[in-house]
Length: 160
Image 1: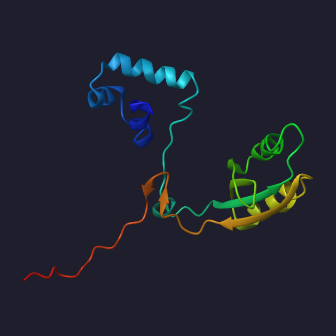
Image 2 (image 1 turned 90 degrees about the vertical axis):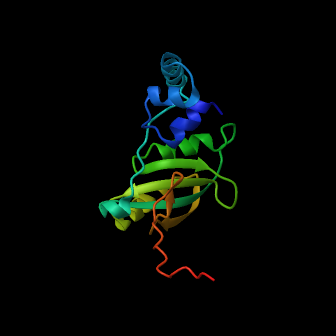
Image 3 (image 1 turned 180 degrees about the horizontal axis):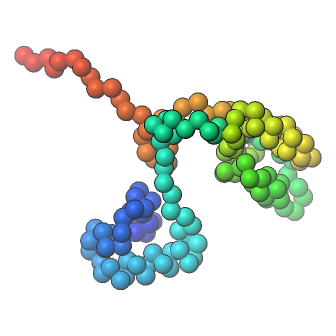
């Protein structure tokens, strides 16, 4: 992978100047390459990873929903996936291997709003054959960042 992409993927807050120093290239060349990557759609968005547990944010519930669907002739899973990912509750949609076909990340204001989404919008779709919903209870690591702190070991070191 491109070294600028690797750096930005780890920390998108770095400036072109900082990246240029890291990779020993001119700032103008780094800026141009970043712009080119954005134009090509390789860099789509810059994202902040929040630790919701520290924020004590309880205004949203997130669920992982496994969806078994019936693929359509000549379009496979794409058409039903598009129909599903266009729902505003769906944050992410993946085609996966295994027992289920699609994995959704869904957000709602409460467990009830997520349950209503499944019951009223998702399950009634004719291509949907079944769903399994998993509610996120705690996040230990998100987008490569460990969010939990280990307690310091209070034991004294043993020396001889």
